[in-house]
Image (cartoon, rainbow, N blue to C red; front, top):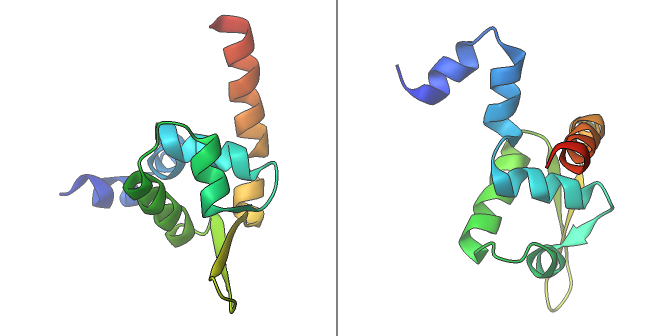
Length: 106
């Protein structure tokens, strides 16, 4: 059985959550979007060290999981914005707990 299938079938909510938002860049993207809607370029400039491919891949994964909404505006040049969904906004308490832990234990 593939890892992704095992996680989907897992009864452990922590394992399923970590599978969706547990990666380094994924967590940082969510943290940044908790501050408000951002365009791709804004995320790239704030998340120093992330490659364009990784950022694109992680944003797509978050969109597929219903954590992020991608809005494309009919303009020239094209304008695309990323916003957290209600599901994504619910991660606020998780990110805050991580921030608190990091401030006190690292």
